[in-house]
Amino acid sequence: MDAYYASPDTSFYDSTLERKFYEQKLRHIGYKPYPNDGLVTFGASGTNMCDRQLYFKNDKGTRAEKSADIPFRGRQRRQGTAVVDYVQLDILHMPKRLGKSAPFTMAVRDNGEWDFEDAAQERRVLTHPHPETGELISFAITAKPDGKFDYAPDGSRIIFEYKTKASGLRPMNGKLDYKGAQDDHKRQVVAESLVFGIDEALIVYESTHKPSWFSDEESSSVTKGQKTWKEGAPLTDMRAFYVRITDVMKTQLLNDLARQAALVYAGEVPSVTVEMTDKCGFCAFRGHCAATLSAGNLALLQRAESAMAHGSMAGKAAHKSLRNYLAGVTEISEEEAA
Ligand code: SF4
Image (cartoon, rainbow, N blue to C red; front, top):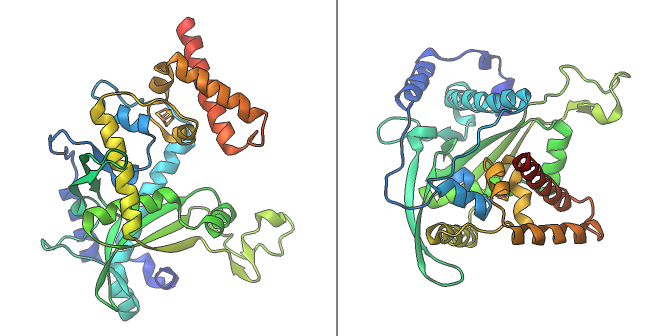
């Protein structure tokens, strides 16, 4: 990718490729419902939900909440979508611009379409034993990857996922140095592997914050922690992680999904646990979750919060998440009382 973006040719698209790309996109515009087979369907990118969120998502009587957000977040979401769009078009140009030095190329389907997004979408029904009861549970996973690549040296296929990060160059690199690819992104490619039968994946991160155009190392107006160049080179704005998807990873995910699907089929709303509150930030059922929390469940969470506040967990991420959740519950009860 660096070879491609360093080339002056990157600024121009080949009109035949570009037209074909947009024509493919046009063909797939529109809503495609899942088959009505009564099975819980997990989106590959949504296999990290808490039990209760998954329950609400599959409950016909519960609607996802659409509340106003801080405007920059809307712009940030749009930016992420737009970046993936142009990266896919750029990847289609790589064989033409880079010749044999482009080892990864977008795979082509039997019908001639490139193997990404809606053209690549598949829903696969799976049956797996419940990890505790052993009962066979059926559910589906649907996936539409950012791409499937052909890897020229050995002719193999590899899943491609592209993630933008707006946290800044240093925070992005610091986090990736420390933990590698994000757990939920790894779960996503494991889910995709179960759908497509491809056991390798590339998760690529791009920071939307870029280094200063020219070196800022000597600039006195940029503080040390804000510098975006180091030892004469810009900090990297792109990181790639290779994931080899093992049978153990697949079984772990299948166990989780079978357990969660069984909860939905059983028709009982799962209680909120301390661990679940870790996932509330992007949940679209926050109001409903708080409004339907039982008194017993609330008391349990309040006791856990109090224990955390007086122990070594005080102020840590898990404690903050729990406190935020409980604050949401208080807000809802106050609104209801008013
Ligand atoms: S608000 Fe939090 S606990 Fe409730 S369903 Fe959403 S993620 Fe789960």
